[in-house]
Amino acid sequence: MSEHIVRAGDGDREKGADWLFKASAATTDGALDFMIGEVAYCTGPPLHVHDVQHDTFYVLDGVLTVQLGEEVHELRAGDFVTIPPGVPHTFDNLDPNGRVEAINVMTPGGLGFLFGELAEAATAQDPPAAAREAARRHGVTRVGPTLVERLGIG
Image (cartoon, rainbow, N blue to C red):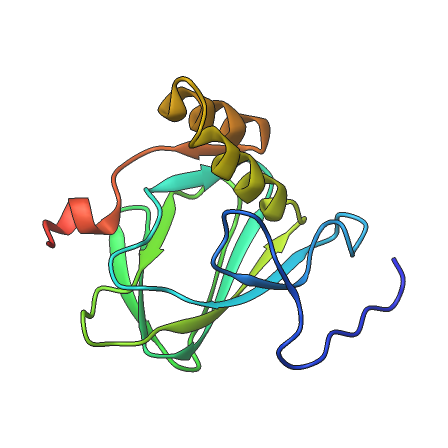
């Protein structure tokens, strides 16, 4: 892996992703994805597991609600969580008036590739099946509902 400098405000937006990639599997020889982004109200993913990736968050602003297994935690600015492969998890911004900004690091990298395939799956003949297959290829399995569904928000 070679040196990689990305200036403030710079980075790549992977197709289908709201996160700004400061580094990705493509720029780190697969070592990691380093993303920064805002989590919009009630937009979190379903409860899922990663086969091989560690999923790590550092909260910069706001309250990020994270589910780890059956437990739900509120992470505030300065809080950090790392989730090893195989642990069911999800996250969301559950404050309709709140702003959540976080750093997300995936090791090894590759999440950007999944985002691109999920965006393409939306136009497939059977979007849910195409999305499940894309996730499976990238070692991600849905194992439960979103936090919004679980908590009956909205």
